Image (cartoon, rainbow, N blue to C red; front, side):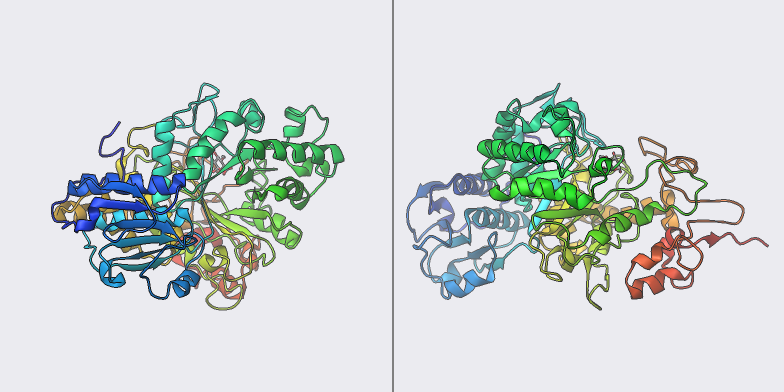
Length: 601
Ligand code: GCW
């Protein structure tokens, strides 16, 4: 498979306006790692396809007339003034790109702090070339702003994908791993090109067969995926079944304080790391939508997460514990229980109780990836607990990759939301990048949209969300326009009319989708189960806590402290004030916070 849409934004189309300098004919790598080799291979492919020059790849210490790829721990780097100073400015995944005019030599140097940084630098250079920028005076110093930049798969081993709209899984089929190394490598290239550094490869709803992914039956196959990902700077994570000790361990309990259960997880961790030495850790959906968890044993989420964290800690692994915990067996007549309050009520009181290799994963809104939601009040509310923000790239509630719905504007609003946790300027992006509180681990994750479809995302325009996600979490300060421009040019080329048309379609799409499916923050007016297409009462008389309470008096959930559920009081003062009153509540969230009265004459 090598169609244009298969290659997504890595088209590397022939572009005669690029004036390739002489040094494009040589790529020198300053080291032996597979990552450096992959970087050289990518660069060679890109340059050959775009310019027709076929660079030689040589492994030597230093070459003057070449593109040199090396990492900072290599002592042979020459001709870059103030290298030590520069080195201090980039983090472990950062890089420097310097062209001839900057270094006074005849070449171009891509220097990473690590080999992965070099690879990111190569993808950056290739992006510039695809955009048609010249290479004569490049001087780039770049580092990712977020530490964890993750993707979550909801892939099942029968090959299906929960909420997947782009074909079957690239990892599994018929209860087995596909072993499709080519496809997985191309996936790793795509993800690495946008800076993704962690991928969990199975659904958070871990069913029977998937529970065994952490056993010797499947670990050799999982290790093969991890071997490919590692080359591209990506650590592999697995979602686990909280009840594994019972389901596959032969124990009678999964109680986190039971010594046998603890021992079972400790030895599991040892086995996993034997196969995958850089295994990232576990993603856990516990006590959520009928999944097992510590509540069964009257234990807290901290007890549950810490038990797993202790098992992973000796190997450098983390536990990513989801906060999507709420009562999913609610009585619709009960107006006191409010699903929007649940995550905060469950987790905020546990601040300080989690070990420091536990990270809480929090959906962007308090409900569930609706077209529009307020930002979860948990952000900023737990200064002593590592947090990761969870977005949804797969378009479950936003048109299922049939409708165009560009989500970068939505995600930017979330990241730019001021929580006021530490006064003005306490933006969500500053919480998840670890700068507001001294989190050991933090970052952003998202449920992915890809599958076996040749174009990966079901509809080629849906690739924009995947690309934009990676770029935005690399640097949340990039503007929507910058990201869109990058994607459109790399995907469709330089034709002015195409560019302008696609950009205009993307720019308007989220708000258009909102206006005809979920205005004023109402949410949940979708068909039950599959969530496609509008249905006014679809979730109204259900058990899921998903009501809009429309009747002859009005529409919307009264979540004020004054006379509603009190959800507004989970926010810091400034936002509480904003949401508490119908006068100041932003229009687009009216039905999420206040009863919006129907005016009758
Ligand atoms: O939005 C809901 C989805 C479920 C999903 C759940 C979750 C994986 O409808 O399909 O389960 O969220 O995030 O756990």
